[in-house]
Image (cartoon, rainbow, N blue to C red; front, top):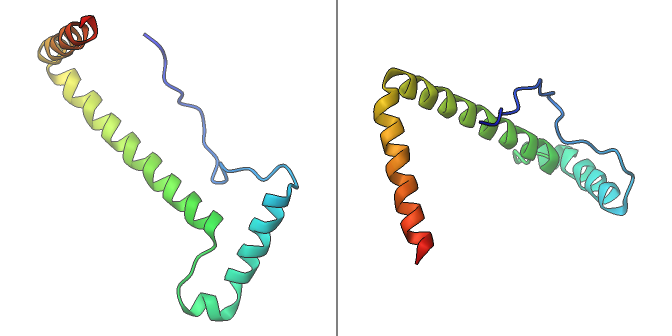
Length: 96
């Protein structure tokens, strides 16, 4: 089996290493959204919103994976048979 990546994740997983025209436009758009009139409307900078959403998805995925791992550890034979059955079905469909 392959190992899943379990390395440390930083709060700033999205990196802006290059000063490309797109990165400059992103910064300018973020600066516009940082203005008081935009803040009063509850508008967040796009990059911040993406980071927060990515963090939520990552946490959701880890929680679900942990729950699945715990469930499989409780009844390994049952879920191994499920996996075998699904594999056989996929094999039959692929053979067509």
